[in-house]
Image 1: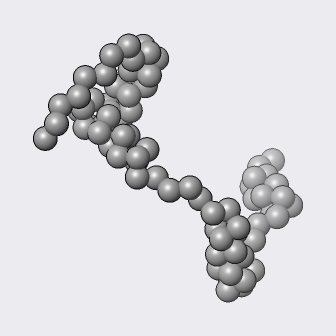
Image 2 (image 1 turned 45 degrees about the vertical axis):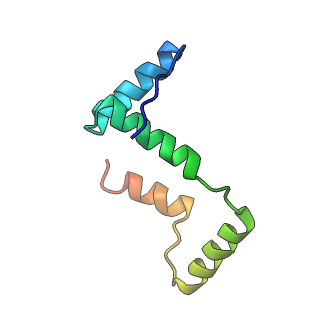
Length: 80
């Protein structure tokens, strides 16, 4: 495997990577590799295709949608 050195990394980026690594119980090296893999392998999202898929799935659902009135009622239910 190759080895890479990163020079002049901003301190805030280093701190964010280190924090993310700790939160995910990974080494700083493993977290950095994961972030690089995701960045390089990511594909642009086709918004129209995604919206079409969401609409198709939503059309198959029965009434599952929650309104603002439903949320407000649930939030205050049981409170004096």
